[in-house]
Each structure stands twice: as C-alpha cells, then as structure tokens.
Length: 263
Image: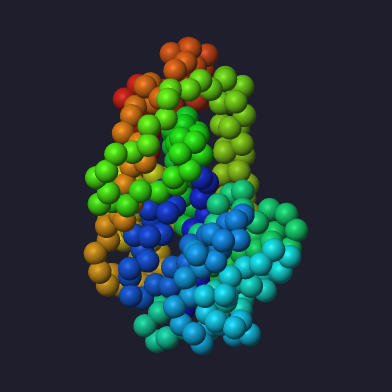
C-alpha cells in the first residue's frame, strides 16, 4: 500500500484537491490531522472503520490530541496495515505552518524519515492572490464553499495592505516552499500549482496524483469546492495600484495582474 501526504500552504487549493480525491474507492484520504483547533481535528479526521479506533473508545475519537507524539499518531492511525483490501493508498494533508512546535512537530520528522511516502507538494503561483484570499477567509471565517453553492458570498469591504506586509508574506511563502523541497529531496515528489493544475485542469491534476500513487481511477474526478469570492484583486485591494508600482521590476511584479480573481 502506498503512503502519501499533501503538503501545501494556506489558500493553495489543498482542500479542493483532498476532497476531490476523497471519493476514490482505492484511496483513504484524511484531511488536516494537525489543524490547530482540536474541534476541527476531530471533524476532519474521518475514520470510517471502527476497528481503526485501537484503544480509543470510538472511531470518531481517534484524532490527534495536543501533547501526544504526532509521529506515533501517524503510525497508529494513518500509516498502518489495517485497511481493507480495496485501499491501495493512504494519506493526509498538512499545511506549512501546522505541527511546528512541541510533540506535534514529530510529524514532520516522521514524514521526512520515511522515504516511501509520496509527497504531493501544492503551491500557488500568485502569492498576492494567496494573501488576499487568506485575508478574506479570515474576515468572513469561511474557509471553503461547496462547488454547487450558488448563493451570495459574504462581501468584504476593500482593504489596504502595506508593502512591507506583502513583502514579508512573499518571503515567508518562498522560504517555506524551499524548506519543504529541501526536507523531502529524497522522496518521490509531485509538484502541483493551483492556477495551472487545479483551476486549469482539475481532473488532469487528480489523475497525475493517482498515477504517482499507482492507484486506478474509480470515480469522477471533479472539484467539490467553489470560489470563495467573485472579485478581482484590483477591486478587493484598495491600494492595488500603489502596490503594483512599489513591486514593479521585482520578482513579485507578476503577482499584480488586474484581472486575477480572489478565490
């Protein structure tokens, strides 16, 4: 059985990818096992088989608790051999900033030490769009929208972002991406981008994941989430023109496309 992990930064489409893969019969796809909020960890760890509960009182209680060894949790509840015969690959998703301190940090060492784990590294090319999407999600407290949700989206008034805040965010994301690539240099890694892979051809991207895991396709590969907002960056960021001028001639200049939508 193949082991895998989806590693991504916030607002890169990791939930879209994970939920789009979750319906595949031969995959056991867990979500954010190390989400910072315990109530979310309990919800997102969808153990569907009672026998996986081990020493927990019920399968729905088999989620990571603060203070536990994350490495042991992964070995006991995720990367084990107690799945049914249909399951050919098992994995979960983790964000750059999750499980970084204390016993939870052992999750990263567990992943790095096991070179049999296939890494799906998901990034978003436009880091300004990433930052704006994050700020909108934080303001609305709405982190995902169902693909079939045609209702109104919560409106967020246009806001300003300082050049220094942008620069700090860009550097942080680039540093974290480089750290992940270095940490998993010995692993089989599939690199995906939000814009050119998930948005442009979700089914094709999902098939690349299945191929990397040697898992046959067993159902439709369609995104289960939709866009959070329906505005362009230049409409959401009130000082967009000023920021574009500030970053002109730098590597970040490509992020300032007036037509780019917030999502």
